[in-house]
Every structure is written in structure tokens, then in C-alpha cells.
Length: 309
Image (cartoon, rainbow, N blue to C red):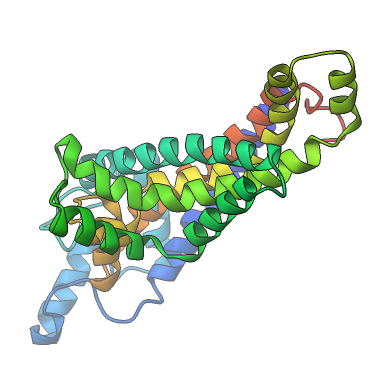
């Protein structure tokens, strides 16, 4: 297992390096400049700024310098926000997005698994249909629609929760719920499908024939095996959600990293785009590794062997 993990970590490093390289080269293809009011600057002023930031050097030189600085923990400074260090901005904004995403992920995953188990155990019944209709709506309707509906119903009409902001527990309710609905729906559908398939397997029938209680059969045997495919979707979903929903953060005025990412793209803030992309990519790659490890934890039969790499 240890050898397998080391091999995966090596793959992670290579993948991350490729992401950095492609993102850096993509930045050079963006039209315009990262300087505000560039159209009002004289050619001399523009060239002076490019020289100051090293943007007049060959791309290969800029690339090597960026890698060297990255290795030493320097992601550069933001053009948009007065030369503020990118890493300082990410450290300040990421916890907000992480709180939002983590809360939505936990709530959506737990409720989704429970709903999926419930629907799978009562396959073909009214309870199953009702659960799947709710899950289908949850996937079909975008999160920003739920956000608007929740703001109007619970924030404006009933006035139970603030319609925007972030800080107090009450401000978390609406944005977290908006994000959690989609997660809940997707997990419920996956879990229900796997439960239906697993519940008819021979080893489940054998366990029932041995006189095991329904609870023992369901949670010790069926749920454990049905969880394996569900874990597959939880990995990438966790990375995407934790980094923050750009739309949700914008709707509720949450000062997270997603909103800043959009702003950096529209202003050609190269260092900020690079830093945010690297953060997104790093989280995604790490969660993929965690998912691979969880396979072996959930089902001992899926251990690393010579045939799985």
C-alpha cells in the first residue's frame, strides 16, 4: 500500500507541474494587459511597467523565474490589488470558501446517503418515487435558482435569515442550503442505484438466510459495498465545492476565493489567476489520492496489488 501511495504522489507532482505549465502559457495568450487604464498610458509608460514586472523578458525566462519563485513559496503579487502578495490574499479568502463548501458537503453527503439508502430499500414504492423526484429536481435546477428562491421566501417574505453576508451562523443557512441541495441530490441518486444493485447480490441473500437482522444486513454488508462508487464522485465534488461556488458567493456577497477568481480573469491579473488555479488543481489532485486510499478502507478486497496501479 505504501509503495502504491508513493507512486500516486509522484503522479500528482507530474500532473501539478503540467497544470502550472499550461496555465502559465495560457496567460500569455490572453489579450490585453494586466495594468489598469492601459489605454491611457503612453507606450513609454507601458514599456516601463512591463520592464518593472519582468513582462518584457522572453517567455522561457519568465517561466523559469515563476517556477523558481513558486518552489520558494512566492506566487507573485496581484496587479489588481496594489501589489498585494497573492498567497496573502488566498490565505485570507480561502477559509471562507472552505467553510461554505465544507458545511454544504457534509450536509449534502450525509442526507444524500440516507435518502439513497431509504429509496433503495423501498425500490418501486411511493417512497422511492418521491425521493427520486426530489433528487432529480435537485440536479436539474441550478443552485443559483435555489439561492434566489430561498432569499425571497426565507429572507424577504418570512425574514428568518439574512439575504446576504457571511459571519454569524444565521448567514450560513441560505448559501449552504443552496449548495447542499445539488450535492444531496447527486449522492442520493448514486446511492440508491448502488443499493438496488447490491441488495440483490448473492452474499446479501446468504446473510439474510443466516438469520442476520435487517439492520446488520443493510449497514454491515449492503451499505459498505454500495458506498464504493459513491466515494468516486465525492472526491472531485469535494474539491469543487470546498473551493467555493463562484455564483453562490456572488449572490450572497460572500468574500470567498471564487468571486476573486472571476475578478482576476476579467482584469488579466496573471499572478492571481495562476495562484487560484494552482489552489484549485492542488485540492482536486489531493482528493483523487484520498479517494484511491478510501477504496481500500471501505472494501479490503480493493487493496493495491500488482494488477492495480
